[in-house]
Amino acid sequence: MKLRKIICTVVGITVLTSSLAVSAASFNDMKGHWSESYVNDMVERGYIKGYEDNTFRPDKTISNTEALILLSRMLGVEDSEYSLTAKNAVSAYSGVLSKFNCDYENEIAFLLYRGVLDTDDLDTYISNANKDKALSRYQCAILLTKLLGAEKEVQGSVFLSSSYSDTAQIPADARPYVEYVRDAKIMEGMGVDSYGDPIFGPLVSVTRGQMAKMLSGLIDELNVRTASGTITSVDTFNDPVAINGSSYEIEDDTLIKLNGEDSELEDISRGLNGMVTIVRNKVSMVEAYEEEIEVNSARGVIVSVSTDSNGRSIIIADAEDSSRRSTYKVSNDVRVVISGAVDSFAKLKSNSYVELTFENGVVSEIEVIDKNATVTATLKSYSLNAANPTVTVADLKGNETTYECSLDGVSVTRNGSSANLNDLVAGDSVVLKLVYNKVSKINAESASKNLSGKITSVTHTENGSTLCVTVDGKAYEYTVASDALITIDSITSTVYDLRPGSSINFKVDSTKITKVETTSTVARNGIIGTVTAVQSSYNLLIVNDGESDITIVVNSSTNIIKSTTGASISLAKIAKGDEVTVMGSNATGVFVATVIVVQ
Image (cartoon, rainbow, N blue to C red; front, side, top):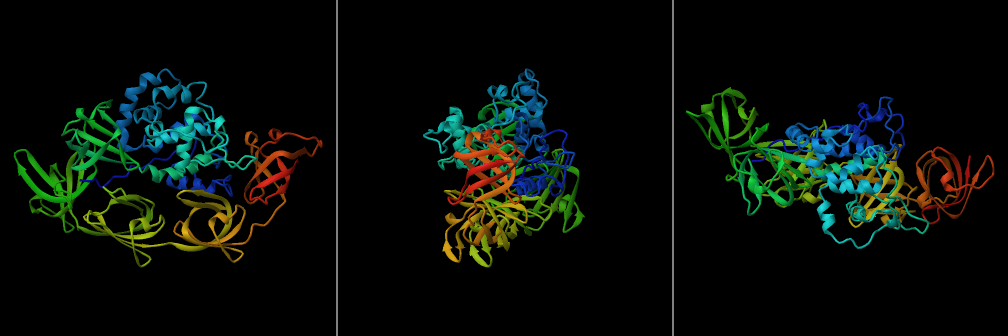
């Protein structure tokens, strides 16, 4: 029996302990910043917060320790479901952590317990010499791979070659991780070198704005959720574990914990209290306890109710699979609600669909509810896991709920036409028809709108293309539909013909671009603006011209002049915040500088 509450709510991420929750719209240093939309998303969700002076500081680097705190909160270290898990984690690793001057024992112990870190990693990230160092991009690639539970996959694969020209700067053991996050579209490269080849920038420090973007893309990917209750069966041969009758397949790398200690599946027995943690639709950890774990509610069809010398009890089963059933102890003063009115326990009938509410592990309320329900919401995501397809939606307040799909399948219509689950798009307005709390029908309408903006980046992968577009000073990221109509100067073109810096009129279907109209990129031979970043190792300069950040390639022919002295200087002598005038050309689609005058 699936529990009603299956989503683990991720708590707000605070990079510094002194930071305060601030409305994203009120940050005085975010307007027009490339990461504005990602920061807004994360702040509105409550994952990241700002500082007391009403700033977010998107270009501030994040330290190794701060990064680990973020990862632990992504996995729910402060969530109520994990209160016992966190306690056991500290108990298991306090001895190891006592060797370090660690201010965040709970968070680091939680990552060790969850297998994201091992004790060999501690010196790298939390030693006195390293804990306050800025997190480098190659280290970030390693941590995000571990967060996704993909380390064994990476270590078990054969690393052939790198996609980046600066591979030599990436530590050899980190290269497979860099390729993994690239293929998974979690981390992008940092432009191109003077030959036009992509670079990763492994030693470049990660900023708060960059972390906001990565976290924004990881939340749906992680899809962390839990199910708690009584372990009703354990099959050590086929490897499923059942919680309250619902079966969960165990993976080779699933962590097994018994009373907080590493164990084997055969150590887990039927009747223990347990909890499974699911990450990326796979069981990442099974915990079993002799201590009681709180279960909030459950739904099912009544198989039987009884009152005897041992007290009251109720057996409920999954409405679609009667073999999935669980028995619960019922309080003597249980509140029973039938047809909206308080009634007696004896009036409950077999085959009635009920919701059970628990208090201290005992059923305190039983409500007979209609098997049919309708939910109006906004689609957030869906999972096509063949064994257990799910749909996640958000209500008007932003509260997210995940529903299982009916075993008999789901009837889907979108914009009035017959469709499939994989035709749905995040952002669609949906009406779900539920039968026994499982989705049987979905009516979806796309949220179409016409917009105008400027392309700030174009990304192409084997899974499609993505445009980052600035609209009214805010940056948004959209996927481009495979059949999108794209015209340049009224001539039918392709997404590969679009260039950063182009002003476009476009149509959005929820979060997919279906139509783009633009003109040829205006040739420019000069840029006046403020330096926002200098990447001398990669011969790149980032300049904001008052509208957007522009990446400028500096090659051996570029002449850099200090206006106050007239002397030639190197790229490394240019500092963030300097005012510059750049002459060159964007004829190749990337601005290549011939002369840079530093004011």
